[in-house]
Image (tube, rainbow, N blue to C red; front, side, top):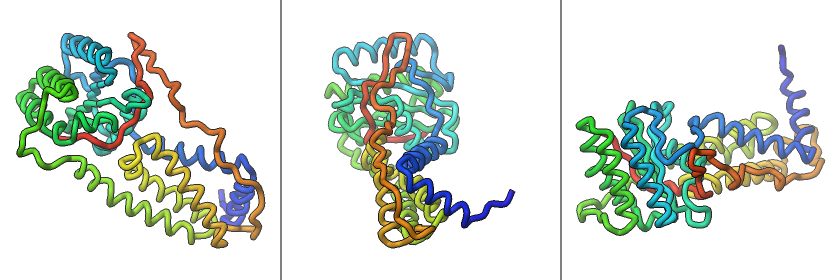
Length: 308
């Protein structure tokens, strides 16, 4: 089957001239972002041991402790062990899981995720924006170094996870302080990991304004997909999606202003802002055994990562 680029370009601009055409492109952008992401499981309970490293006794005890902690403080803590990171960084995976599960209360963003990938021997404590003052990157690093890593190295996964969760709760209560020699944070390390790809994505997105026709659209989408992890780090998952959409619309407007990508030479048609489109909002529910679900919060990229 032969595809005529000129004909494809004409059809593309014909679609974009229609109000619903913009909605189609925005949904396509979100779909492409979703397809490139970690397969986040449905949230069913506070402790989800998909890697099979914890005993049932430990899981039940952690569930009880975390439930009581939420009742007392409103802070939501979830533990997830994954059999694979699917070739993604543990920082990116933690953000995707955190924001999909909407950990923490909507207006407080007071959630915490303890993510463990035993096959890659990596772990991360991801902290919602509302708890970054109570559970700093330095404190999360210390918990990994002093509580989780020693037990994991000795093969005591139950003891390590229990000690780690207890330390997270104690830190939030103000009962667990970092030592004076903990001066570096992995928040900076996380930024250093997403910044280079973000810069490349930004360059791609900028260049796409000067590339006409279908090629420019492809460059814009690719650029935003590469830029997206940096946007998540800066704005959080939910806001990052809308920032990406805004940037896409802005690039399309600038292309028209600059005269690129006009195809048939007409500006034509109306413009649709996507006001009727939704990313899912806060109506999501886990459907878990005790009715527990995320309260609508999102992450901010804070926390610490480690290995053993």
